[in-house]
Image (cartoon, rainbow over the protein chains, first blue to last red):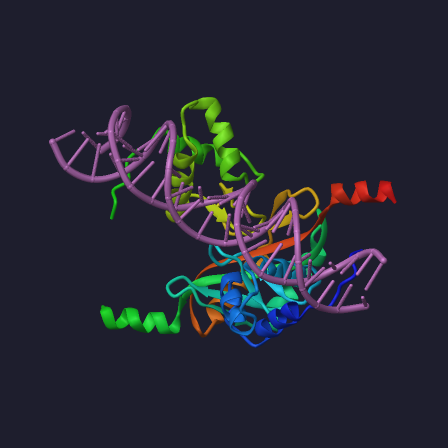
Length: 134
Length: 134
DNA sequence: ATATGTGCAAATAATTTGCACATTA
DNA sequence: TAATGTGCAAATTATTTGCACATAT
């Protein structure tokens, strides 16, 4: 219904997310956009993030800690979170994507529209740090 | 470190989750346990849910709406959430589990300890309701 | 002109925490 | 009796919302 009107705040938020690969939280988006639009409000950031993910321009990740994170990349891919340093990095596996799609198609108790796979562990860098300590 | 002591509240919470397949929220657990322990507090429920999931006796699902949900089943499996009625149902696929494990093993940027796959869509029952309206 | 978007501040929702008392080992 | 767990209430965190004004079509 609601006809979408242009807003530079929204465009900037989208652009900012496209420029990053670290899946920032709403608050990080806010702090960064403040450099460009000093009077932007956190409410506006939340409203636009939610709107953009509703229309599929960005992806909302609810899976990696208490604050939601946002991903500027919408092509199918998975994520790995390091539970030491809280980094979230992209995982690309066509095979995994294929199997997830297939599992979705074969599911008999409903119609699947969306799929998400998340992995948790310790990243290389944090593993190295632990070795040094031991 | 912290040596674990018995508590009937904790045992009841675990037992309650084992008896359900609908992945209740902390609040639902609280409301139900109140029938048995009228003076139990929400804080105690939260503390025990978090403790139980830390020691792997239950699983915490952060993926299905604003409130976390809890799963008494810890064997590897996936979930489907109906975005109409908010039900979360179990999905069992050995093949999917296998591929997820394999993707975890092949991941080169870190060591994976945990995997989660979630599916979103509309369940059979809600699909039927929509048909009737059209 | 009218719908849509924004900033600000207050409200809400979910979860966590401090503290005095209770229970377990 | 020492460590762990509980209930209660207050605090914290993330997110949402109402409202008056601003901007886009």
